[in-house]
Length: 305
Image (cartoon, rainbow, N blue to C red; front, top):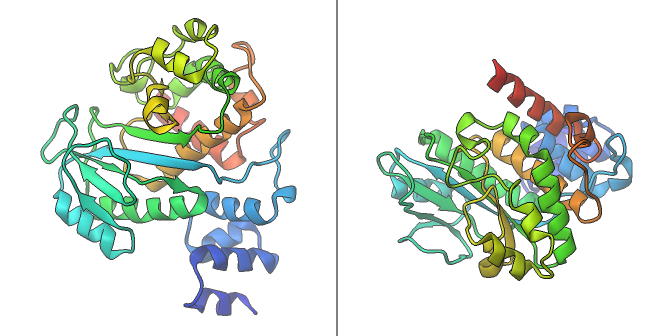
């Protein structure tokens, strides 16, 4: 079996082709170029099949296999045309009335907080790991093809399954996010920093209030609003933790990088915390891959320019 045979084989998925190319001994960069996909996608395949060979400076890379969900807010295109294009590319998508019901398919609904003609929110079903990212590729490509628009009222919301988490692990996650919040703010647009947005408020002021809670349900009740950068209210409805800070985007690499950044933070927080003094750029390298660090640095530079 050679490179050309693998690439021309119509009976295998892109993920399997990537696995086979890696098994031949090609580097992840070479495979990324040959397969025409992002380095991060290849990294996930590599980590799944050879996890013992993937490390950051101090922490083994955790393969991306957690259940998650995505909400992408945008405007300016016909919702039914978007649904048809996504479905025609193998990912079921329907236009629905406003609802909070988790479907087995992607849905496009209205959102009263958005501004712009034909504003909408496209919401995923429960996704998992690499297959979830594959569906995201299809959705992002359709949004890009139809030239969906973004403005400052649009956001990107990511849910992670928290059904197996204990209260202390959620406290760890909140402490870590709060301590890294200033750094995270630096690679977000101004409208999503500090308390500049009423739909994703800072969590630094409420972490202390949650420290005495004994259950996640109690913490969610104390938070008493879903409009925080990290939202615990979603745990009461979906057994998930929602991250609301990211600005609106339909760009695949931005969405994937943010998902993987959060996944790594969630996994790190299962057993570890950082203090405010430790929460700097360098400490992120303990649990974020080099490509995620490069993405963050690029974003910081762009917003600082």
